[in-house]
Image (tube, rainbow, N blue to C red; front, side, top):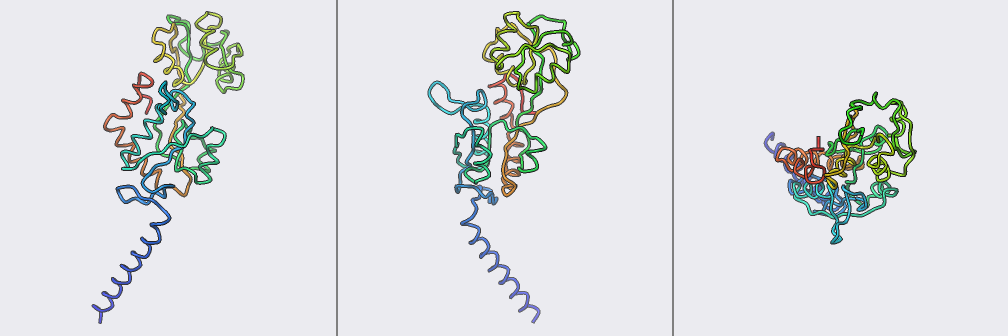
Length: 266
């Protein structure tokens, strides 16, 4: 009798498992590893990105979508055994699209912030950046933020870097953005500017002979990662595994070097 009850329990568990599997097959896609990732399209990772944010996501001269975030996302999808489809979306609408389930994740230098962590799940970071002080090449008068006291720094008035410059004692010369700030610096019309390290490294990669250099950097970092809705927590976990592999085999370092001239993945 005990054997009959055990057999009945085994059969019941098997039928239940098959039923659950059948029900789940219509609602969620899986990776080659069998993980239930809840993908928008079976076998495809749908990634939202702007396509207008160089060097992270932009179109090259041939019109192809390229960039650091684009190539990291492609490498992650490949590691997960998935195809990839990019949904080019304006930044102002990108989180609304994620919430509405139009794509699985965002790869667009999405910074991990306490506010966003209340609403979204994040993978581990694939980009780490700092604020940096940029000065004319050969200028030895600045080696820390404290040395900005009394100097003139070119900053966008809507940027948090303007606040940091003022807190460091610098007088702010208003500009519209990085392009104008670096132009004023190279022309000797200001003594410094503060910006994100990725922006500066990208500029130096494109202009290796630019007469500027990084003199100091913040201790605090900004980390960017893939963002998903809480319902796709399993996808964030799967992406973590892929990123771990890509870090270990040197892929992330290689992509960092390609776009920034140094490893910005950690």
